[in-house]
Length: 301
Image (cartoon, rainbow, N blue to C red; front, top):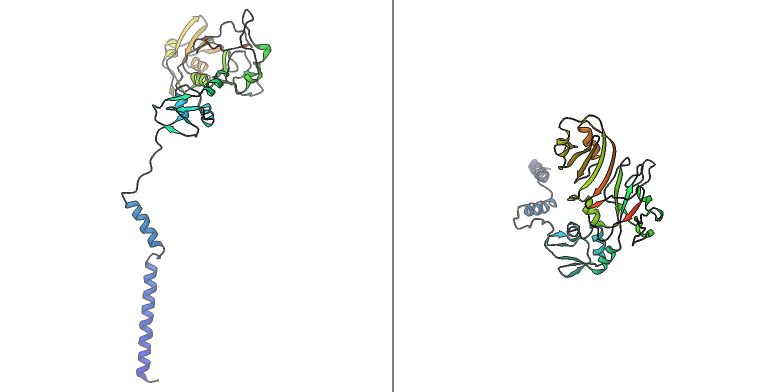
């Protein structure tokens, strides 16, 4: 091979290698072809002002409005809606989660009203040793006392409604009364009454007679009426006064756990006995301990 041809071959190989190397470097510094369209698409979506923002659902759930208006509880409302027993602005609805304008007219159908009319509310004089709700620590729930032999028929033995086992179905306490407290306990099948007595916006008074021991602070009554906090939260104003040398009368519009006992401890007193004697306009009256009666249609809390 001549010297001239050898030189040409060397120059060709060198230039070809340089071009191949340059191509590899360029490929390493550029994003893959498959990523470019995806990147541009995302960038366009972010930059495009025409993309509509996500919007919150309009209106308020029908079940929530029904509970707020005292028609029934939210759980009951869902049941009525599923069975087509709710009318909104004259139109029957049956889809759970339906949202409407807060001012919408909501009416229960006749079937729902009839069902509510069959629900009972029971007034029980809870004795010591029973818990208000579920059984705990070996102690029975107060609902076990609701049986035919414990029904109070009044002084003259007259009561229009007699006990039936169906009245125990779904019966639940509307509020609590500690195991070491006695007095009026409400058990109900009616979500409207439960919400009225224990709902977040409940304003129903509960009256208690409390026997105390110890030496109170000088300004104890003032603090008990307004000025105490529990768990870092200010208590609502109360009505507290002495009814005798060792007995206080409490009227509250809220029901924190062991509230009265903890309030008394904060002013140097210890509760020796506690009895609830009234809820709203319903007094315990002459209902004997361990016995119960129905709330009459004419009685309102």
